Amino acid sequence: MCLSKKYAEIAALVTRAQAGSKAAAETLLLTFKPLILATISEYVYDKTQMEDAYQEACVLFMERLKDFKSEQPGYFPAYIKKQLFYAFVQNAKKRPGTSVQAAFSLDVETAEGVSLAEALPAEESAETDERRCAREKREDRHRAFLKLRVAQLPKAQRECIEAHYYRRQTYRAIAKDRGVSEQCVAKTLNKAMKGLRKAYGVEET
Image 1 (cartoon, rainbow, N blue to C red):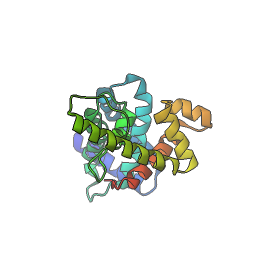
Image 2: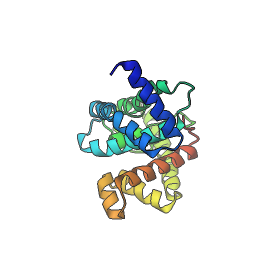
Image 3: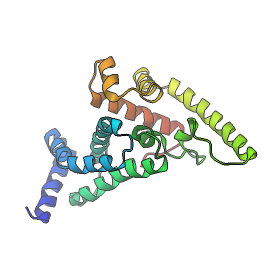
Image 4: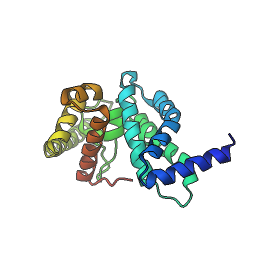
């Protein structure tokens, strides 16, 4: 199939999906599955988190499909590739020792220029006593704020955050405990992180 025809088919699927066709959306997700897998395979450092990363990528894909606005639906392939790049590559590179879930969801700067991930314990590096003291105070302040905001989340979101980030449970384990699908867990965590970003004054892009 020639490239132009392929793009035309994708454009038609995008139009139908945005008009409410679940089948078109699922076909698009299947079409872009190789791109999703290639991205997370290359940039997710903790290979035990691959399945969870894929679930997150699927949620991200569907949300960005809904948000996509262009008079040229054929631009969607370039758009979604960029979205996946920023979600998994840029954030993972900032903290290569962090799992993809922490990087994807927490490593985003607040209005004060401090990432949510910095509210968690970080490896000490060479620094002056004055800078270390300032950093520790800043981390304590943001850790306390993060703890407060997590406590204020709706019950289901709070429990999923605590299970995944504090107890390090996988999506599969959380889904089994709660009697729901892994996709449901991914969506719940995504909503929770949106709430935390809003609390920090971080606007969604």
